[in-house]
Length: 137
Image (cartoon, rainbow, N blue to C red; front, side):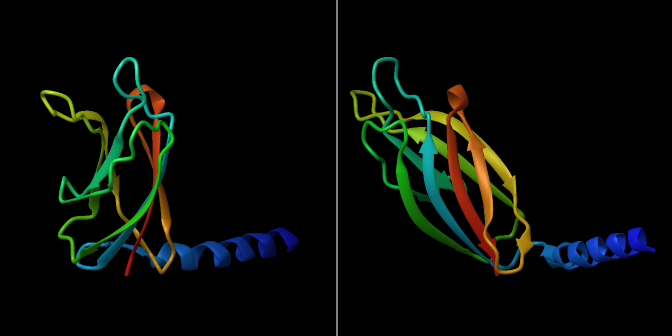
């Protein structure tokens, strides 16, 4: 009897969370690009990293010469037509060619989980990581 009560209690705790999960398509998506760790740039210098979200439609400011940047920038997407978020991490180049170097791309499936933020860890070149948070409402 005790085991049945424990199983029932666990199910009651899990079912509401599963019921909340759903599509973000057509909802407002709030994205916070938080920070990065261990990002690498050109051979002899730290990167000048920035992050673009949703293709290159919205991007953070570039932080100069910093392998562990903190952006804490917010982006809002109204009624996206997809449940996937494209995240690109770049090293800004201001040299002669001015072509920025892509450090990596991640595609994250979005899930509406009530009003709670979901964490995303985007792993890029040389195991660098960028952390983001999002929620759909």
